[in-house]
Amino acid sequence: MTVADVAIEPEKNDKKPGATPPGTLPIIPPDPVHMAIQDIAKFTEVTGGDKRDKEYEDLDQTKTDPKTYPSNTLDKNRAANVVPKPETVVKLSDDNSYINANFVKDHHGVESFIATQHPMSNTMRDFWSLVWQHDISVIAMVNDSEKDLVCHLIFLAE
Image 1 (tube, rainbow, N blue to C red):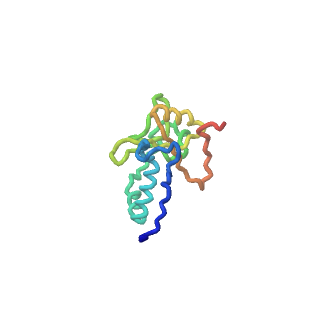
Image 2 (image 1 turned 60 degrees about the vertical axis):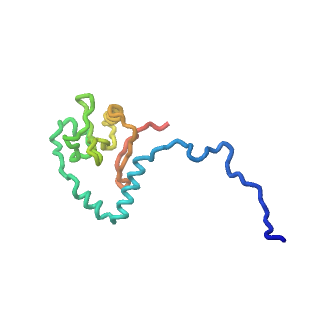
Image 3 (image 1 turned 90 degrees about the vertical axis):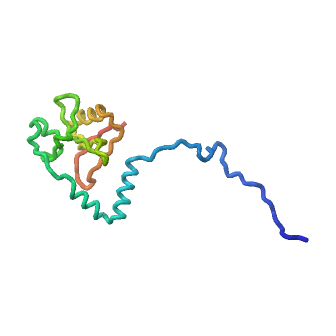
């Protein structure tokens, strides 16, 4: 008596030669900048942006008087009325050097970032001093692409 007509096929081997077995790859931590962007997008999606707008309104909007700094530093500011806050200004090791930059604290209150303007031709040396002296490993440029700003090359093109 025949119960079923079964055909047994040979076992398929989906493994590619030299493939790494599952669970043996090194663990690579996620990129913190990418994670932050995803968090902001998710936060905006969930709250409809209302909460984000409120948080922006709650930010300290005090302005620093440009006269706080010596007059010989004014030409190192991209805009005359935008100067760093004295409490968080980044100092360079050369006492005479000035850069329009502030330390930014993270959600734990730790100075984790430095915000600065895109360097101009007369601040390029100060910019690279900042990068070198503070052991900067990531440089992110955030600007308004609609504005016609003069942006000097940070790296020389080959």
